Image (cartoon, rainbow, N blue to C red; front, side):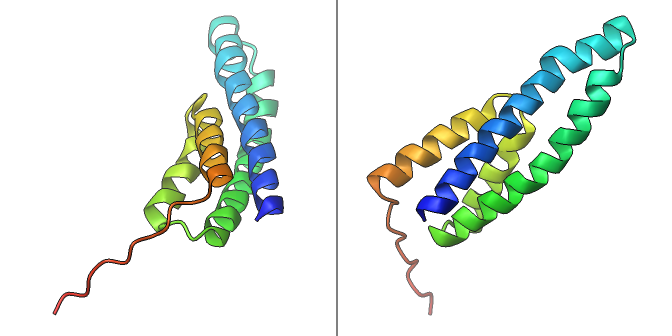
Length: 109
């Protein structure tokens, strides 16, 4: 799991930085100053990097046996500025202390 967590942490930070640059620098340049270059370059890079983020999140979630809902929420964290940083910190803290054991739901008869 160590390698999967490291890959997830690295790509979460890269995606977070790219999205922050896109939103805080690229979008104002495009719409206030009619300069679309940053959005074109960083937006495209963020899109491709987000795919790597999804793969890294899936890999980590599969290894630590996350429920599908948890995995999807962590995956969506890469689409909102600054949230990937929060998600990365929470995931890292949780896995450092050990994942919570999943309690099986009682069988319904």
